[in-house]
Image (cartoon, rainbow, N blue to C red; front, side):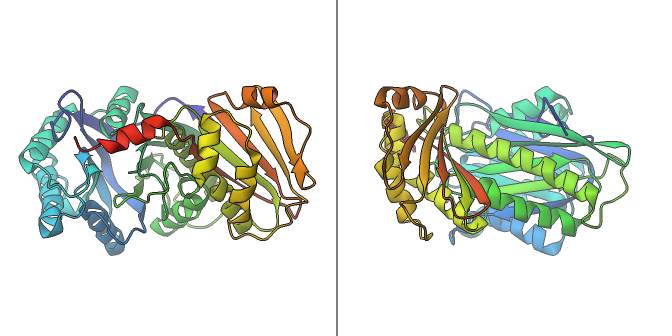
Length: 407
């Protein structure tokens, strides 16, 4: 597997474009479109919030019908959530506009929205945005980057990743982009993720690969503990790499699974590190746990702890908060057996062992915690299972951003 520059246009046959439709923002692009030259099989994972936005329902219905997909239209600024029958009608109108503009059947058009809940989309602006993007579609790295920038809301930077690998002598590419900075606590899987590949693979295996990988990637991040109404990850495979179609879980399938995991992990970490107001990516690694599920539960509990997140912001080695978060996670363990470490590019330090604080330097710990990426390593000493979760520190700016998000 080779890591390359790019995003959703890295794979063969995928194009993208962006437009400034002024749906909410007046000084930037706020619409994106991804188009495959040929119909692609697709898989999706969606929010488990009972309150689902109209585009989530639209995409879920397409997935249930087993439709192929050729286009994805995304808007930022307004979520099209809690918008009733009119919101669903606007999804249909979006798809029909793509059909009128590009000749792509409306039943092959996926939609996604992100932004303020409860507002209706200004459809005349969205329609104009689609018509403006049609002639601008292109397969360059820059086209993909423009799309990644257009879907941001409170994000401070775009998020992209791409890799290549070989299947039966053919070069296969997987690329993706995502957005997410606040209302991030996926449980499937406000986050949107779009992954494209030119691999030829059956719909059934594509769905299984995405469903399994989401558990250890997007489902292992949290910024603020709020699961959005719009969480969506879409994975499109158009087969244009020319490899023999993958229809069973062989070595080629495993290559794809590894590539998909790299893309999803990279994008998930980019979201966690760009949490609203964040100054640091906060990772928790749990090793030697009794089971994989225990490891997941323990790691996620630590990165979701508001008190621990505040301590990371303050560069305070307050290990008691970490131990507390482990203790209420629901996993069973002996607190006198585990060890806790802080890690960053500045080094590693043991902070807790044998049920008491280790003999460590507060100054050294503060230095380690002052980096832009900080890891808590938890050694459970119970088995061989491990997992990682990603979050961010909790800062004053998080409250400032969310106190006036609608204004």
